[in-house]
Length: 368
Picture: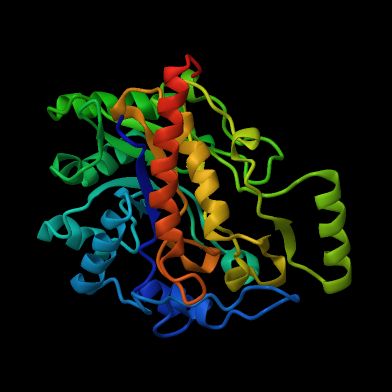
């Protein structure tokens, strides 16, 4: 039985760009936030510092090659590169992926994930400051957007399901008409000689307070990814969290749980997602959210459950999304760190294997 197809979200924020220089000072990258992180309560695991790959620069092909080699060795099939299109052709952070596409290296599979959201100063405790507004000028802009990414869809490395390139939409609920967008892009794909697209919508429900988007089938998406942190949210957990926040002044702290199967949605159109950890205090300080007690062992258990949940599906459709490959300032990364070494990567590899085994056992005894 083929294991789940692990797809890790990939942040291209680790290189200077003029916009960040203007907003935050010369040379700013996500490493700036990572390096200045501090402990905010007893037992807080900050700063979280990279190990094997160091504080890399994504303008260097050597850095991208080293990432791909580590990823493939530990079971990551593809990177989902965050892709920014703010309307009217306005983009940012496109250089790393553009060079991946133009050079043909590294050889790891990939897809694009459209981060269709206004950029604000929320990363730095300044939520009311708008940096780049996400706009939807209309049909012509959707066509221009499709034409801009069509060369990627044609690349032989591009991740496919049933022969169709996978494209992920971060905030489908913010599209003025998600169904019209789906219909248009599917039509454009077929007109371009593709078999169509495999369009995936995020169903965000970060700490279980209600899903933001729940119209996957109605709007014509091929799948939805149920996105929920492994956060303990029992009455006792919430009371303890509120007490700590009152005494220490934040951040919001939840225990990391291994109750993936209990907390997450499943279904024919729903794909799983797993988090190794979450701690966005490097960006948001005391306004951040922390999953306390995350370890590779706990992550492996959640990967096992998530992988087993799709083991009964056709091999091509067993996508398992991992958040993330390198979101260091959000505290969710697979890349090696000084605390656990390659533990997160090894946990992913082992959890995929264990989920495959458990899924095979379930199929054999007649359970889904």
